[in-house]
Length: 365
Image (cartoon, rainbow, N blue to C red):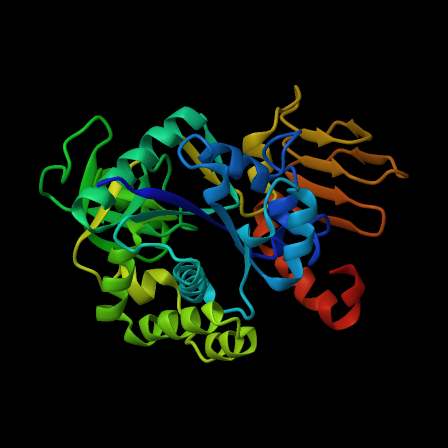
């Protein structure tokens, strides 16, 4: 059977850990954090274009980001930006996507889907396409649900893990695809060390591949409330009743797709990534993506660094010069209206600044 391949790029996050550059109307997916010339979202679009036609790439996002994304990606059609009317986690996001596809006449039996995140750094694109093609072929031939696992390079406590089964690869081919034994939550450091040492665990990339039929069938079995929502919303959208679709979506439970589906389904597979991968989740990811100077600093913008090493100094201001003396392992980010300073090991806590500013200076968020 010939499948129409559709790519869904989830791009609704707020990127609060990248404050003060990432703001509500211009979040991290629209920032150039892994490439000096392209935003994370543009990189993701370009990457999947090797496998999916440009007209079959959809962006799932929040309503307030629909216009900024359209302005930044003028080649996208209006109907390629699917703005979820409410926050309902990744489960709700994919329900909204599926409902829109059904309303547009997509055939569940001949439509396969690649669900991607807009905030991953991947290299090279050719290997990404090779892995994703294997994942899609597995989905299209097995009728199962597929994810991509990243071979871990360190005992990372910030990622979820996927444990492969002891059975041989489910689909012997150049890119190995294994049956999934179970999903594991973010571990403590000792558990992470054991996971890596065992050789049986992958980092969970948070990307998914399935046919539309497999998604519907598995959702009906494991999350019937979400499944019922798909058809009700699709009917409302097909009839042009946007208000009814909005109301139906608002009544959905707030569930991640991992919890609602992937952790419960039986026929779940993991394709071993053949590409390098990084989750661009906080400012320290810039250090892994950008060139370092002789003192192992990342320095962007007009900066004067004296006796400073291992630091991330990013000056996006058109007015100020950032000067640092005698610093080590510090992160400094400067914009025209804010300055953020913290130790490198505290970059995950930048979102605490945003939470506080929402109460005191919401105009800065």
